Structures are given as structure tokens and as C-alpha cells.
Image 1 (tube, helix red, strand yellow):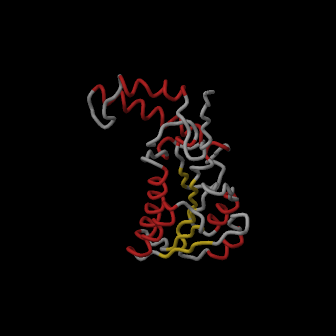
Image 2 (cartoon, rainbow, N blue to C red):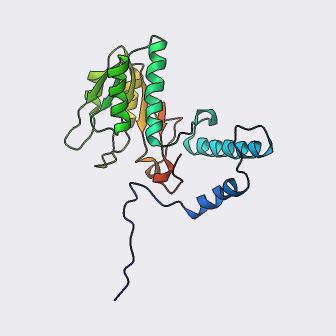
Length: 215
């Protein structure tokens, strides 16, 4: 009886951790394992590693290190982006309205619906065309003076549609709204230059491109 070799074909869901990543992380499992918030030697060593990682990510994205926020997963990142912007906007008197699309990840749609149901925010859910794309004209027509945030994913996690986020982001900015994109599914497939792209908040998850889970 011949042996069959299993082939993993679900890389869009998650990827194995690359050997170089394992090697880079190993010291923090076996030597520099302190709590990075602790003030003792082991904590400071872990904190140095954390800040080095933050600076490396910032360089890859052409962003500032202080702009990099670590969360436990992509869903938490989405949740934090939407809640953070909307509550800050309301508190500053800058708006109460949030726009997203009908094919977003539940981390966006369910968070938005909770903001509507429990906190009195307003949300517009945009339709998509036959290819699953949000048309820029549709977004432009939905924006109001009180729109604080537009959140459209870069690539859909089920049908793979790539959204025209550069156009959508510019439309949001022209109205004074911030633009968030869930790039979890797209992060490993293009270059992200946040100094040039009209993106204010970007969500990524390294387990989609050979990094560890839980970040």
C-alpha cells in the first residue's frame, strides 16, 4: 500500500510559521521570556525585543513606530479600530456615523451593529456590485457631514475580491472622515506604504503570511 503525502491547501485561512520566524522568536520563549511591562532585567530584555519588532514593522509599512499597536488577532484589531474612532469622534463632536460594506468580516459588521444597538451610533452598510466590489460613487453618495469613519476591507476573505481602497480612502478623506481597511487577507500580497496610501488605520495578522498566531 503506497503512502500518500498530505498537501496543505488552506493558506488563505492560516499559514505555517516560517523557520526564520521561529528562529527569531525562540530566544523570547527560552531566554528573554520576561513580562515586557516589568522593570527588572528580564522585563527590560523582553521590552527591547518588543520595541525592535515594532520598529521593524513600522519600516516595512513606512509608518512610525508609535503608530504600531499589537493586538491578539485581526478581529480584535478591527474591533479596536471601529470602536476607538467612533467613540473618539463622538466625544470630540466630529460625528456619529460609520460606513462599511455588506461583505465585511463579522468583526466589523457585528461591532458596528453593536454600536448602533447599544450606543446609538448610526451605520450605513454599502451594497457591492456583481464582482463584490464597493463602487466609489456608492461610497461618495453615502457620506454625510457627520460621517466619522469608513471601513472597507482590502480583500475579501471568502470570495477574494480586491477593493479599490486607494479611491475609497481618498473619497473618505475628501469628506473629512477617517479610513480603515481590514487588510488581514491581503497583507502578504502587496506592498503597503502608509505614508502615501490614504489609509488611517490598517489591520493585519501575521499568521496569514508565515508569522505567528496570536498577534
